[in-house]
Image (cartoon, rainbow, N blue to C red; front, side):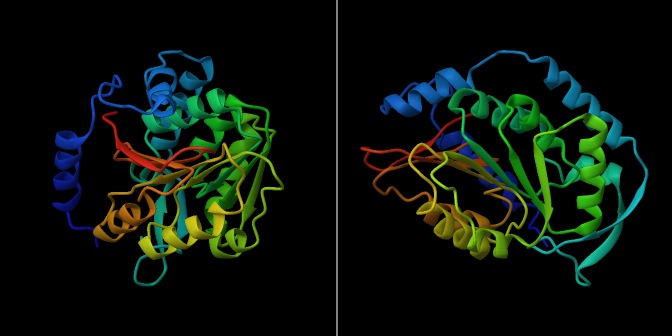
Length: 262
């Protein structure tokens, strides 16, 4: 169970110690460019409005679904009954951060996108509209996988390969085949598993790839994992946006870590 005081306490610390969102105090040209060209980008895309419309529809959808949780959020019995509405309200990446992922895809133009945690498909949808590059999205729960694939068909997302599988097996056998990749990890919330995923993936992805980790302050376990993952190492910039932790794989850079208001 989540400690209800933990996240607000961590958010307060983040607000106090993070750098100004306009880039002041950031001495890395690459990260400064990220702030100016991505975080502060005010472009408005028609599909942003459409994505919010889909979210609103799902929040009103009272269809029952049995959800099988395989990660740290799993219930005692591993499954429970819920509704599309509750999932859309409480277990979906907020629009602000879905849009940020979309802007990152547009700006950095990865050759492959991999999402660990499909849920109802709202993040996949906004990424699908950002690019015509193939998106591979993974979901462990068969019922959620079915719901998401139905949504993709209804929404017309044609460049999505939705796979129902456990993340461990996929990550272990993952190969980027020299394609730059953006990987979004948002489906386990176990610090141990998250570290294992990063360790497995980091040497397999080429330079100029990006890994985004969701909910890095969801629990003390996730926070400790993020602290370890984000330690400066050569060829890695790490950025803390509170809801997201971002790892940029870059050549010829000394490792640096940044906490930025967003």
